[in-house]
Length: 200
Ligand SMILES: Cc1cc2nc3c(=O)[nH]c(=O)nc-3n(C[C@H](O)[C@H](O)[C@H](O)COP(=O)(O)O)c2cc1C
Image (cartoon, rainbow, N blue to C red; front, side):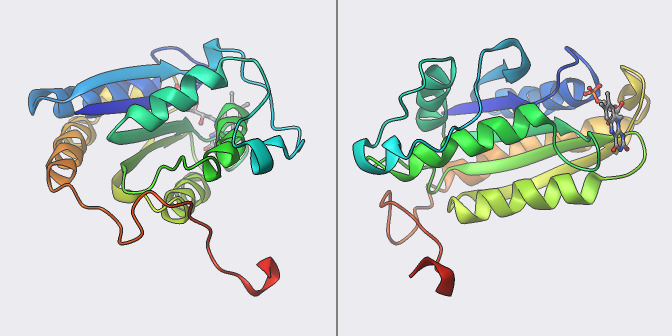
């Protein structure tokens, strides 16, 4: 069982990653193979709306997102972690999310993967970051396990909140327990598009 932690924080080993490490450690206790992947260290270009993935099923941009697609598809669970920047997830986060439109095609899908979110803010914006990542998971037909919402400004602030650190480890364990249930959506790995009257 693999759980991938996608850090959208530019600050290495900052508050977001401290909590993500705790989640992944909790998952590791129950036997999951875990990886923390720092998107800020990678070359990941924004989606340029070329539309190629709609016809070929592949994104033609030759950057680190190609490796990340494979990691996301291989994972049984994906933990998204972001600090709040201007009342929402970071630009690194939104860039990765946009590029995953290529996973709507070519028979690829994040369907039935277990998800979770860690968000950290100095003061305002946690709800927007959380709800956007939650809605993303729901529309990808992922199963959200839960989230951690924490306040912290300076690197390491979140370590002062024992309860938060413990809840993070518990979230990791919960992800593993849900993955073990092997839930699969009725339409399995089929391409999933939500219905809206605007789409037809
Ligand atoms: C460019 C920038 C924008 C930020 N915008 C917000 C914000 O809108 N609301 C907020 O509460 N904190 C904001 N912060 C503070 C960070 O969310 C906070 O320092 C957080 O602990 C950083 O997490 P990290 O250590 O994982 O990088 C901002 C920080 C930066 C650098």
